[in-house]
Length: 210
Length: 210
DNA sequence: CACAGTACAGACAGGTCTGTCTCATTCCGA
DNA sequence: TCGGAATGAGACAGACCTGTCTGTACTGTG
Image 1 (tube, each protein chain N blue to C red):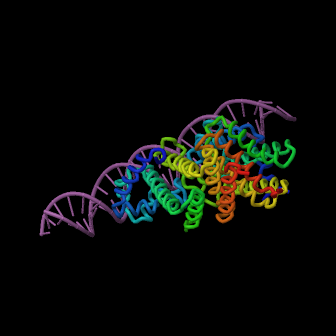
Image 2 (cartoon, rainbow over the protein chains, first blue to last red):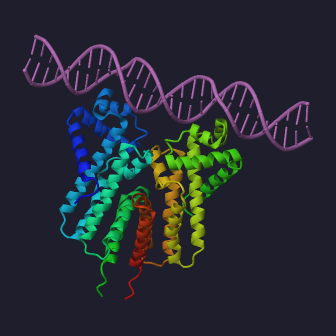
């Protein structure tokens, strides 16, 4: 069914949940998630995280072990929230066209909901900030992108178009490009263009019925 | 004519040229450019740069002043090389469709030519690694993206389509998305999808002549 | 030879970061 | 009331990074 490493991801997410049952640990993760995204991972020290969350340094290290693992937990949480939101939005639509449209709608709503200044895709940024391929966060980034790619594949297959894989690749490209374009040209313009592009690409993949 | 801040960018590029007339300074910039892209800006210290380029630390600081300015010079050089290559490739084509196709062809050739492991768009990565909006490199990133956006606008206008601005925004989205998709799915697949998407989007913008 | 310019080599200071450790306090169930 | 677990506060070590400084060697020119 699902995408790559779904079971493993679910196990890790569950582990995060267990950890965050502690209010202090929860506060640490919430604070770190905001700071890592807004100011960047490298620019956010553990001292800043503990100061902002009003927590002892030992509490952070007791629950997360290291900054690298805290970063991975931040990315896992963001990935989990995105997947839950996207799957729910898709499930609420009927018809394959509407379900695909829900993907860009969810992205739009997600970007609009960011009270913080929009700083692009957290996973692309994390990949840039974590050049070590062995960093625990890198696997979360790879899983996130592969899941999105395969999820668009599932949605495209339901359309009954000639080459669903090719369409999925194009929709993935538009999806990723919309995030970058939103930083340069603003959310509204970028999302409008992305929506129009997605519709045109789907139409172009329909079997010619004339 | 050109895009935002063209004159200023040209002045800075010329300043870089003058600086790099010194062989030692040239070696520093070349080494730093490879290391900054491959291993990331934050993970590359000035000690590593001077060790790899066989240069004294004072030489680096005499020519570039600070690491931040060295980063900006790295980004300016990369931006300049990309523009020169793209403009030359576009000039070699005849006809508006072929000129737009040259953009993705140039990107494809650029990615293929990277002997190093492909790590995505250097400018997106730099923006992620330099969260301070006042960093000298951030302006280079913004200039680079705005130039690409406006250059695609010029090329789109030559097509004579109904809404060239909307098409340019979509092509920009595909262009940026292709770079991200290339990291996830590989250059060949991503570029194939992007080329197909660009053609379909251009076709969809043509006035219906039926 | 004398001299000036440039570059190499490396020590050094000042700061920041991660991660460990100690000690006091709070809270909660037996 | 007692005891243990979790937490807050902060000192501390070790590593790393940027940027400065001193001293030496090489090169071309008069």
